[in-house]
Length: 339
Image: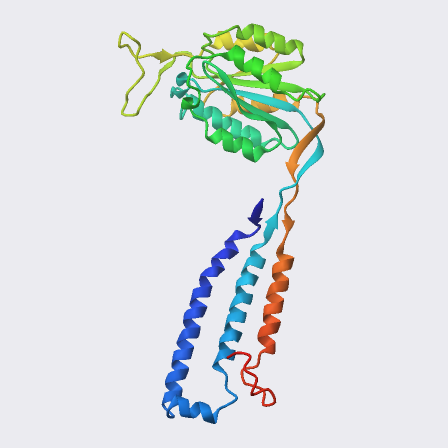
């Protein structure tokens, strides 16, 4: 992988066309000045040591050196080597409900966006932990395998929307079972599942799945999204809402009792999300209580500085520019090196 450590310096490349224009302008002015004294062809015979081509070579060598120096100060770097590192942390699998009911706006801006914001801030607090992401509706899919690459985690998180799971519903049990299978088998660190949902489970035995996870030492923490009095589900904007077969507006409510029962079976925490940061703080406190142990992690090694080669090229160009004289040496006047 390639990158620039200081890409803002690449804007200096816009100076290069200005240098070319200035050089062309200076040549034109010089030719006009010579014409004032007489025929340029006759005057060239009187100035045999003058070499316009040497001037061109000197300019383009200097131009090349400036170009290379700009890339040098921008800091070219390479880093594509995967390394195994040891760190003290825990493993967390996040299961995020992406069913249509998560578009309800009883939590601002809506349940799903609020959940994504909360998870993004939660990820910002991780340092040595591993995190994975599962999305579910009528079925569950692994969006991001468990990893210590938080940048990728946030990137995948930002792209989540209900359309990514074609089967609608709320298969909480399937999400928990998939999360249990997604942990690193060889790790002995504490493991936890954070399940974010409105609790409207209609697909499977979520309580049984949470109980099975707890028996393996994996705590299932639930974040309930929504309000008890419910909210309609907006579709397509313009104040349109989802309706049932009879044409009645569907109102989705937080099934808090179901969420509490799942959390109890999974020996974890239940907290309801609202328009404050109380749910986030509760999750952070719960994660802080977990026992950290040594984890193996695959990460890209530090990007190596690669400016040395370019710096040598710039130096050689400057030396060449310095060694080329503006005028021909009288001894080597007959040598047509730049003709």
